[in-house]
Amino acid sequence: MCGRARLSSDVSEIKLVFRIPPERSTPNIAPSWNVAPTDPLPVVRYDESAHQRSLDVMRWGLIPYWAKDIKIGFSTINARAEEVDTKPAFREAFQRRRCLVPLDNFYEWKKTGTGKQPYAIALADGRLMAMAGLWETWRSPQGERTRSFTIVTTVPNEFCAELHNRMPVVLKPEVWPAWLGATVPQLKSLLVPYPSAEMICWPISQRVGNVKNNDPSLIEPVAA
Image (cartoon, rainbow, N blue to C red; front, side, top):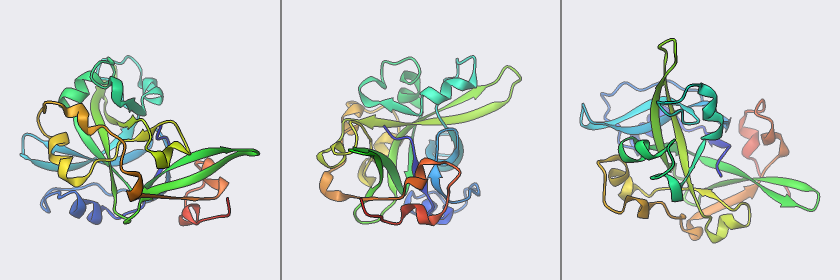
């Protein structure tokens, strides 16, 4: 799964990497070294009305438009690639509302003889990751609108399999247009593990387990 991550890159860099038009207004969002479910994150989507990409802040944990309660978002922070086109919470968003979730790295915990050791996982070249995501708009009974998203996961590559039995789908730049665009035949073929040789990981402090801890020291390597 993917349940904790870091996005400390500046919004201006995110706009550049994901080719958000300069004239598009973009949200201000503070850097975070410990992003957790229900937190707000900038999400890249294709704005069909303007025929260009946009960067919008959304809540992590997809709330289907038909949900009666916002609490469903706690159980939908991830969407399994194998069922995005069939599970009621995700299937309509998969057809019409796909997005990219920019992240610097995500965290995972490896079981050890004495407990669990957290690791930071990133791209080996230091680039921003683009997680495959789905987004949705939900209106509360009071009429308040909430936009939310989920991160798609798949089976792990050999690299991540040592840490967990799932990993987020990381998409390469050449397939971003297909994922963000109209329905494409065999779209699920994009939801595959990222190449192991292009990823790195390193052990980090147990402090990352507490969401109250949020500073650059969280990603400093420690002895495993």
